[in-house]
Length: 372
Image (cartoon, rainbow, N blue to C red; front, side, top):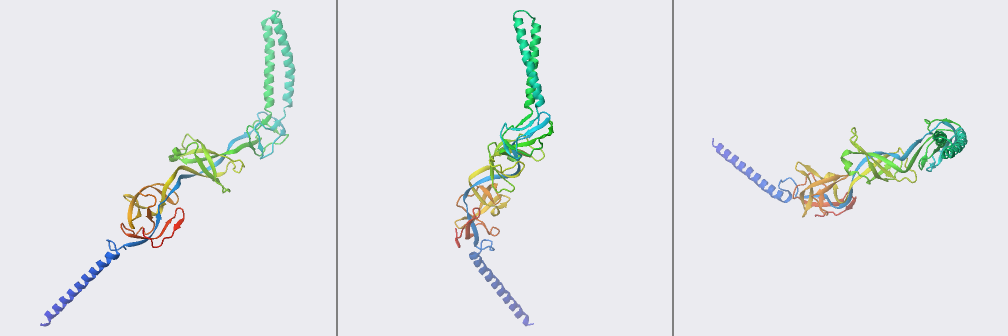
């Protein structure tokens, strides 16, 4: 019975000692957090990160499309009359001049008919002159003279028709270009449905491609586009000369045509082309990597260094490229943007930059243990 009070006293003393130790531990913990932690007590006061100094650069707002090369001019050469081929005056796949004789159809029968009409025309003209003299002295009626004149006019009309038919027996190049493979042989019979050969003008050459309707206001006559073709590493330039007046209801795109010089005939009609269309050029654009931008409900922001400490900066973005985003508001040249540690960084934390670089131009400036 006498041991109970002593036990209670001992228990109370131990409890008091435990509370004191806990209080002392908390007090030491608070002091330690003030030196090495932030307000939350879970983050270090100095954060080692990598940074980027903001610079301006020339940036082009581009869209990409696929297109097809077309001949500047193209025609299928077919005869306008039927007959036997008596002459072929071109080499397959060779250049030809405008107006050059390419092929000839036998016109001997037409020439014979023309020769006969020339004799008849001479006699009719003599008769018309004689009747005119008689009419002047009232020796014949006006009706007799009109019959002679009508005969002369009829023969002349038939002669003109024959001359036109004879001219059609010759096939000429309508423009300067390159002629393709021939489909006729000397001595063969052709008709207006027969294909002699195809002919193209490929210098300059046309480029046809389609752009989405939302960009059509930015693609205008005179605009430059870049393109490349399969099997050729060279990049060519073409100038837009026509934009279709209607939008394709199925694809919601608009066809555009441009021309490019092709003096060495390296570009061939029908080739597949990869097209790069420059919509606008920004001479002093601020570009930063896409991955360092933080997106929130209030908008987008990045962390910058302000007097050596992290500061959250709201931004507005513009065009995007494969690697970067344009900043139209919120950053200025020579600002230092934080690139790493974005998941743990907080406002006001001291920044220790282990590396400062510009990944857009692939230029790195090593500055170990530098605080900005």
